[in-house]
Image (tube, rainbow, N blue to C red; front, top):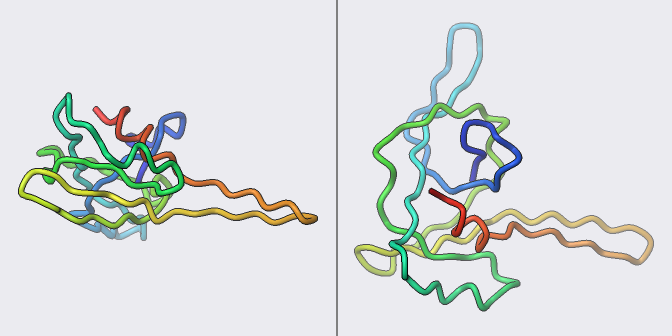
Length: 118
């Protein structure tokens, strides 16, 4: 999961790292292909499971490579292609902060990400 073009005002999107580039000055850059969304009209069965941050995407990746700074990457995700055209993606990011008997759990809203990936 990463912020396209480093824009942290958007939700992170899933993508696959294709290259890791190490420049002579020590700078690291990843080239990533975004996971494409499902076609409009597809009903994602995971939207009903709010505590399970999974959603359905196309099995296809964008033809465009994007240069990504390591600081733009937020987490890993698991991907399972359940047929030739659809894959379930599960965001593996979980942040838990515990303070004085109060536990706050923040989970990525993959369902929002599914709707906003263009």
